[in-house]
Image (cartoon, rainbow, N blue to C red):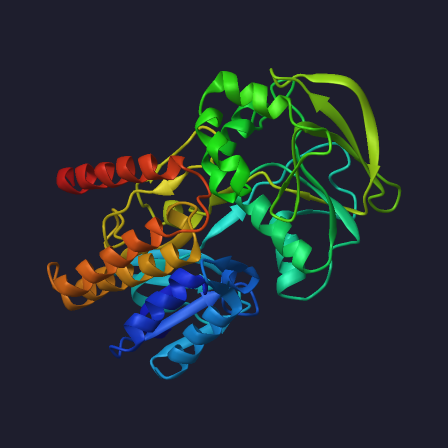
Length: 406
């Protein structure tokens, strides 16, 4: 059985940053990731932040360069974790490589997030993908997902990917709404989709930003969004069409058209549907954490009715209710890469305290990383879901109560 001090699951921004911090202190770290290339979501990110560009691939390359200078850190890519069991105050970790299980004194789960697809008629046709898949195609593989497409679903990622596709020379018919949910099917209502607009006002053209306060009022929000031109409003290099819903995707062997219809101020379909020619469709149902390994390892969890906000209870340094098990990054909630990196740094402090038996040690480092986390949140260019702030507050309070009672 191979031995390591820390096993990190996930080679994204949180996992790599934690490995970097631990490696420079001589801690033996093994990083496992199912993807053949390290970097996670960083690999597809490209956007302008103030006066400079955030190029995720360059950030990942810098992290990997730093890690390469620490011989105690080892990467194992193209490998998935298949078993995680606490044994003798340590962890036995099985994976899909076919080799012997690894024994670790601590485990960091940085498993990230998954996209939520939108199931509308025709969504299984070739040419239908999530916005994240389109982002990877364009920014990582330098392949256009098609010649002309449409994005179905609001959200920060929709706008970010729309801009990136424009830079890649892809024509978009715009960002439209999903169909209103019917017959008890899961999904956001039109009103819930529209409510997201109030938190994305910073992405709007300058002339529209004074309207952001009106978007927070239900009555005005319905009037403004229902009254938008059918062709939409120019945003992020495309057209936002808040009163147009995608009803179906059509095509024989691949996507050839999307069926659209107008929405009124109450979110109901009105008028006659029409078709617009497209050869690809991106769906944007949002992101959800992937906490499955934490739950399987016995960590206390916070659950939501639809799974979008399922996260492990966690403390200030990524501690869970299971000794020696830590979490960082989007497994804690959907935020940007800079936030995930700061969480990875804080988790490294928690892990060092555990390994060295110093529960109050490394105070200055913890304070510095906590400050960097607050700064990363304050300057985040995208707020994926404003609900996470309140959820984090509740989850951390529940963690404190669980650990006190335990």
